[in-house]
Length: 384
Ligand code: IPM
Ligand code: MG
Image (cartoon, rainbow, N blue to C red):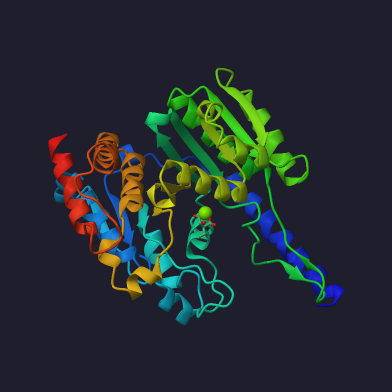
């Protein structure tokens, strides 16, 4: 690239981000589902083991929402086509027709989707998760991690549309030897995620919100995140606000004494990506976490793990663990106002996976199928 081309690309990127700022300024408040007469839940299986595990989560949703599905208040709509084959064929992170269908829904339950990487058989299409988060402006990635027996109850608020992800594929190879990527923070983008974290703390009686950055080094964008954090903290005098750098925070999550003190944690995109995997691993593996992607208009709930293509190649997808997508379904229920059903489902999940363990998944034929596991969860729900 010659310098003029680099400058043109750089200018286009800046203009795009300035336009985003204007869009964010014009944004209203969150949708209030309690007043909605009709709620559409889109169910999108994704790839690999996705369709198999998502089908089980859908059965549980249908079971818990039976009356309101019957009355027509809630509609569950299947959305096909978010598969790596179709995305590759159309060379689109989300095929445009699929995106249109998604936009007709209020909330989406999404199975894992394959993210191509260098050297595999797929062309370089952008990650479907990342594209969906951007296309539907799902700026808050909410990931709870709870281990009651260790006194751990963490709520991560990961910024989901900015940081290193906003222009992750817009980096420039200026010469053969020089590559530059961009990381982006806007005041509006920081404000909305940080406010969401403090609101969560206030509404749930949590007394501490912690920001995590590397503002000592990444001075401009992480610096902005931190400045906005302490400014917003002033509006929540009942809540203790503090901040840590990502490196020591990563270590502190392994410190059995100190880690219990963390409550709500708010972080820029990439740090949130990394630390929520660490936290989920402490809980019981990344497959056990749930993940909500929340915006003002739409919300999407997903399994945290990948699509496990090898399990499908070996014919083992019927033995895949559906816990993560079922946890996502529980978060979905709570988000659209079915809090009681959501709590029941969380409790049933806890009973089935930790307290009772009458049906055990191993990922292989010596364990239960995901269908048997979902049956077990529904039987447990019926007892609650
Ligand atoms: C996650 C995942 C995604 C991310 C990948 C699949 C693009 O790791 O949801 O945490 O990096 O956000
Ligand atoms: Mg991740």
